[in-house]
Amino acid sequence: MTKEIGSNTKKVWEELEKTVAGVSIQELCKQLALTFEEVMTAVRWIAREHNIGLANNNGSLMVIGVHA
Image 1 (cartoon, rainbow, N blue to C red):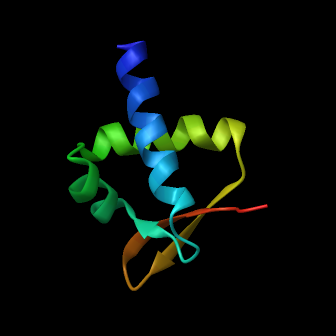
Image 2: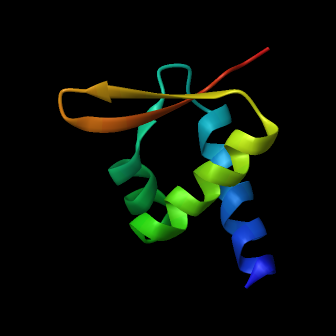
């Protein structure tokens, strides 16, 4: 289970690094073939270690990676 969470977290982080504008939770689910719960678990792990933001964009929850 922990390896799966780590793998999913890496996938989500790599997607966040590709975009400046952010990506919706729904898009992450589609792009990575992960469930909502898997994506949100990954987002929680990333939030512990990195600066990320969450925003509402017309009803879609967006995850925004902070790039240094």
